Length: 405
Image 1 (cartoon, rainbow, N blue to C red):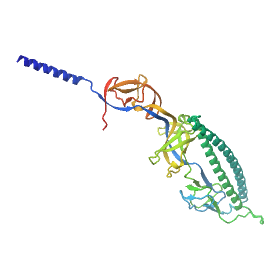
Image 2 (cartoon, rainbow, N blue to C red; image 1 turned 90 degrees about the horizontal axis):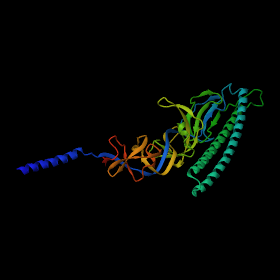
Image 3 (cartoon, rainbow, N blue to C red; image 1 turned 120 degrees about the vertical axis):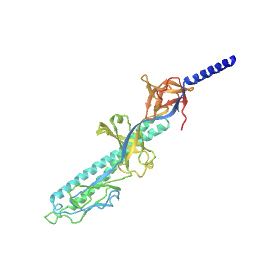
Image 4 (cartoon, rainbow, N blue to C red; image 1 turned 135 degrees about the horizontal axis):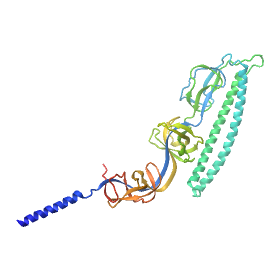
């Protein structure tokens, strides 16, 4: 019996030792692991923007009189010099006034000067475009042979695109100046006094205003029939296919943006991401109150669609979208998710997976965005790190990968 008691106590002791081991041993901590990768990293400035028709034109009355009711509505298509957008009837005695004739003649002189000025700007824009195109073609050949950097080529490309837009804008300005001259000359004939009589007479025919460009009606300022004076705005027209994007950013972010920078346009009503390119950073800032009531200095950034065929035809004037403007781009960058980073002794650190344990590693971080950070030192592309490290983790802690649900 004695040996049975000894055997019992020995077995009990073994069971207590084993139970104590399992009771007091460190339980592994379940964690989420992710790979450190090597690839492209882009730093962006993210802001809301809206589309804007590049060239709008407000049609004003060249003569005074009674404006007939406008039958056109927003969205109606108009054709240059073919569509009658408004008609003005003579209104006595406004049109039967010598002063009206003098004002009409003065407007013709102003319109002639505007045509000459627009022609000069158009010729200058053509010269600038030829120079920019030559520089672009030369740098394109150098880029194909890797003689110039991507950044230098993008700056030259941005200058070429800017010159192309300036030439198109000056051409539009020239067309509008010629149109206004024609309207002013027609208005002058409308109030031209008859040389055979001593009094000033006015033709009784209606004065018809034609559309200055091919496009659509954007806004109707005056709809009902009313008496108008010369220069009264009545309609706004524009080409909805000729769009740009305007994004206002903080002035502290604007200094980091360069012309020619790539832009990703999202959340415009479709899952497709449209691409754009920065054409201009406006030189003057303006003050804007944020949603939190803070006065901020903002700067408008003008963006062109990179590929017109890539732009959705459903977009119109004033449509909202989100823009991500690239201010830095890196290839073959060792990157770690920002969710794995934390501060330890005023240094950036991560927990690296090392043979089933968490190893505390200090890292040197370079550029970063909302998702990834550039690793300059401390990690390799083959490492695995812990996402969202908790307070339970410590150096050399036992870990196990959390099973995905």
